[in-house]
Every structure is written in C-alpha cells, then in structure tokens.
Image (cartoon, rainbow, N blue to C red; front, side, top):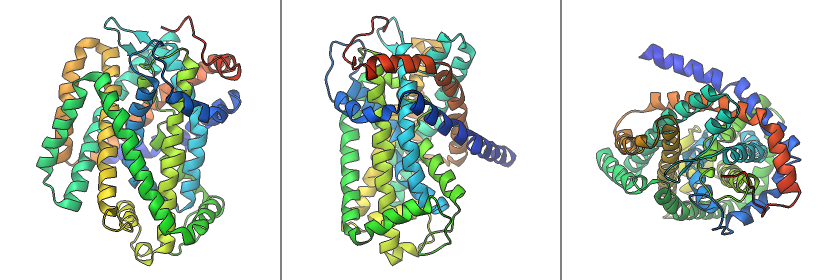
Length: 454
C-alpha cells in the first residue's frame, strides 16, 4: 500500500507538473486569441445569466445550470487551497491564480459550447453533453468513454468523499462534533437532494450558492476594511512577487518567480476547473437558444470562482499576514492561516469560516453528483441512475469516518487524466468554436435560435 501511494504521488507530480500546466494554459491562451478575447463579453454573460428564457429547449434554466456548476467549483480550494498556494509559492501565487482565471474563461466557454452543440436528448427528455458527446461526434468514441469513466470514478473521490471529510474535520476541530454524527447528517441531507435528480439539485444550488458566496464575500470585505492600512502594500507585494524572486520575510516563505507561478497557476486551474470538462456536463442540460449564448453564461462561472472569490481570499490572507504579527509567526500552514485570518472578525469570524467550508463542501457534493451521474448514464443508460445515487449517499457517509488522503491523491490524478481527452476535443473543434463565436457573439445574434440544436 505504501508503494502504491508513493506511485500515485509520483504520478501526480508528473500529471500536475509543467506539461499539464503548459497544456492547460496553452489552451487558455490559444482559445482566447482565436475567439478575439471573448472575455470582453463576460459582463454580457452575467446579464444573460439572470435573464429568463423559458421558451428555449432544455431541462433547467441557464442560471440553475450556472449555480450548479459554481456549486462544484466554489469549494474548499477557494479558501484552504489559496492559503496553501501562498504558503508554498509566496504572495505572488495570488497574481498567477488571478491571471489563469482570466484566460481560463475562454476555455470554459469553448468546452461548454461544444458540449451544448453536440448534446444528446435521451428518451426520458433529459440531456447528456460534454467531452464524451463531442468526441463521439469526432468519431473518437473510445476517448469519450475514457473521459466518462474517469469523470465518473473521480466524482466519488474529489466530488463526494473528500468533501464530506472536510465537513467532518472542520466541525470536529472547531466544535468537537463526533464524526459519526456529521456522517449521518451529511448523508441524510445529501439523500434529500440528490434523489430528486438535476431539478432538485439545481433548485438547492440556486439558493445555496448565492447565499454562501455573499456571506463569504461580506466576511472578506470586513477583513479587507479592517486591514485597509496595509491593503495597498498587500496588492503591491502580490504583483511584485509574481515577477521578482523574494527572500523569506514577515511570515512569508522565500520564493522564486517559477515557484510562485507554478503554485498560483496550478491552484487557479484546479479551482475553476477550466479545461477539465466537468462544468459543461451540466451546461448541456440548460435551456439554450444556441450554444454560444449558453456557453457565455457558463464561462462567467470562472469569473466568480477565480477572479472574485480566489482574489478576495488572497488579498485577505496576504494583508492579514502583513498586518498581524500573530498570524505572521504561525509557520504558515494553509488551514491554520485561513482560520487565524477569519478570527480577526469579532465573534462571528470562526463560525463564518466554518459555515463557508461546510457549505462550499456540501455544494460540491451536489454539483459533482450530477456530473458523475451523467457520465454513468452515458456509459450504461438510465438504469444506472438509482444505484449511482444510493452509492453516492453511502460514500457521503463513509467520507466522514475514513482517512481519505490516498483517495484525494487518486482523484487528483484522475482529474488530470480526464482533462486530456477534453482538451483534445476543444482543440480539434476550435474551428467550429471560432465560427460559432463570430456568427452569434461578434455578430450580435445571441437571441437567434440554432435550428440544429436539439
């Protein structure tokens, strides 16, 4: 078992090393260039996300699809993950996380576009779309099957078990709640939602995601106001550290430019999931007039996840280290750094952080449940739905009581592997992506219906 775990660690070092970072960021830059920097339409997408379009074909509204996707991407990585990036790569990592988020908007747009364009309507009226259906259109069905298998297996790990484990850990650490109690409650709440399918999941996410994000952003805003005297210094430090090597000082580790870029880019890629192919699975179920309109809405998820939430977290942590001597002398462990930063809010700081971790983790359980289910339905048909949901509830319980460090490592490796067929689909269909973008987006035809869209 030790040898197997060492192999998984070695495999992750390769999969999430420079080649994967180059592949993902290269795709981000390529699609950005080919689409004429489609990011300039981000605020149009935000406006469309709250615009009702009941006459379009699909299972759920575009806003419901967006919040379900955000449920899976806005997770503990936005808090603990950013803290770990700062610990390992220094304050400059925050800058690179933000930059990769900006360019990642284009890739999320592209993968969502092809997922919607080539989605399939099932006999029961539900939809399946994503890298698997796009690759099937390209006559690369074996790659599509590989993607579905990897995403389906990965959903149980990173999407369920490790998330319920995070909930149990934060409640045990801060309030001494027994893990068995957390396990029963988490699995019961999960059952109440996921047994109802995508409509039940999306209804909960529509309400939960805006609430948890709003409360978290308000908390961050308070800390930034509290640290306002050093906020300018924090911003300057983040920017300068991204381009100049720094020696250790004031609680920060020393870092080179490459180390800051590596951890910042890796955290940004992992946080917003652009290029992994997960969010397009739910985007394919949304009510769509044309693939570009819905893909533009889906792409705004990266803006909220990385450009807003991750950036605010980074500013909070860096300014707190500068302003607070107690925090700067901690030794800079990610979870502890985040806890002490939020403890600056009188009375409600720690409860707010605990609430954030719990809701972020639970929403991820809901979002990834749908991703995995659609992949299993693609592989085995609708008969896989009920067994999958029951197993999901069981894993939600087991995740709270088991040590899942190895499961997390395996899930990391599967995440990287599922990105490869997804990126192949994006690159092979880049001409179509450009054509659709020029016609609907640049041509101001977002309200026009695509007669070929199912």
